[in-house]
Image: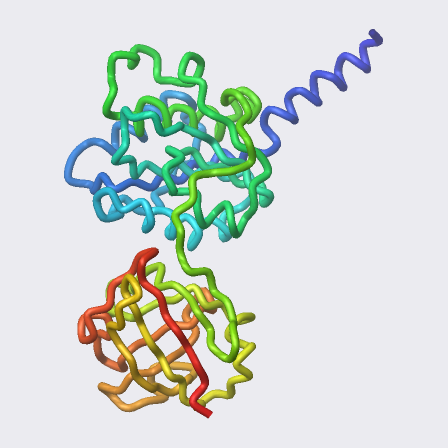
Length: 299
């Protein structure tokens, strides 16, 4: 082989190993920050490469709440550059038969997590390019084989750091799996016979606003104009929790204090609020896959 060909081959191998990585590692857990768990994960990551750029998505996911972990990934990942590696550890099944995986999306992002439903929304909205199961014989913190309850440190942070730093290419994570992940059932946004159906994936926690997954394109099927009145029904496990009428407006100040409104939030999804009030608390509304909404125009 000619020297130039050898050089090109070496450059190609190097490119394939590192080009998809941005050296950005984003961590999400339900650990909180009261103890050293998150710090231990970061220490493991820096032990792989001190060139890594490590960021926190959140460590305040409610304990065991896989659904909220799924939502927070969907909420934030699209704003990060391709090649970013996310490590999400909300793992009530740690030590069980659930798989430890890395998902590569069509957008070029990587998600290192237990395959327990955490990838439900990311897989749907960013697409699945490939899924690999983590081979713990190669991708596990050395000396941690006797530890069974902290895979966030020993498996996920370690593997995510190796991937983000370009120490390993995606192909070296482990064996390929079918292009599918564990899904949490929920009501996707859809328009049927004059009514839009959707889900309440999350609350705007600080203010008690109710965020739905009804996107602008689906909402447009009602042919609304600002100030039109909407009939809203909110159900939990198909049991009616709230029914009311409110105007569709651009911002909170469009209604008087204490009055309800419908608006598009920062993700351009339909949401409900009370101006200077807490809609969720006042009407005992929460969020999750079992919460649904029905929206009709009152014209």
